[in-house]
Image 1 (cartoon, rainbow, N blue to C red):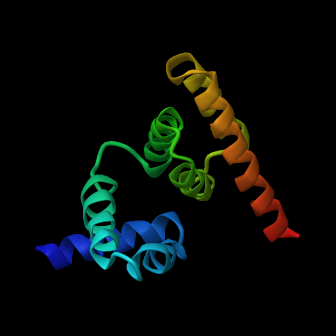
Image 2 (cartoon, one colour):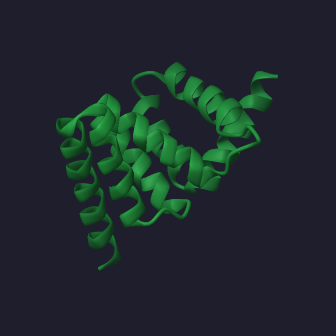
Length: 127
């Protein structure tokens, strides 16, 4: 069953962004291969693969949560993911602004600055 969960997670990661499994392996695998496997199996094999929400809605929820938690690195990853699954820059920015009501202005400012960095990286890649 574990291998099935892992494979399902890899497939979901590739659906979000074909380079995503490689990024997880590169960033986490060399330090903690177990954590990379847990993320692939549980987060993407179990949770992201569940029926009921599409990837765009899942990324919207994730951006809101990570903004509220002020988890900048993970927020940047999921802003990229959100763009990959069809969110617009305006939608992402509005999600972050909405969090000012619940997580405070400092969290929203940090979120907008994270989005600004991701958007700039995307613009540089396109040029």
